[in-house]
Image (cartoon, rainbow, N blue to C red):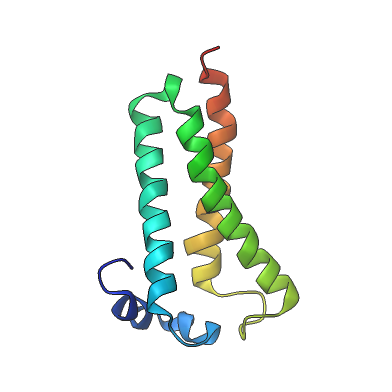
Length: 110
């Protein structure tokens, strides 16, 4: 997404239903995914101190997933009920990250 946004877009068949590729937006989202991955790695490396960075990662991941659910509910995508990419690539990771964030709160140091 970051290094070749248009190539990434064309490599995923069901993205064409979302409209034309926007290289700048794709690169921005790729950067947000990299930042989220860094937060997840930090939370794994130091779980007792990881709740904050996990919360930041979960904000993007879950927020992105919620945005896709809203698009599906509003019928914005040409694919009724969303696409495989929506569910497996965006919504499911958002749910998992949010769940991990909630679970990690029990390790938080006060």
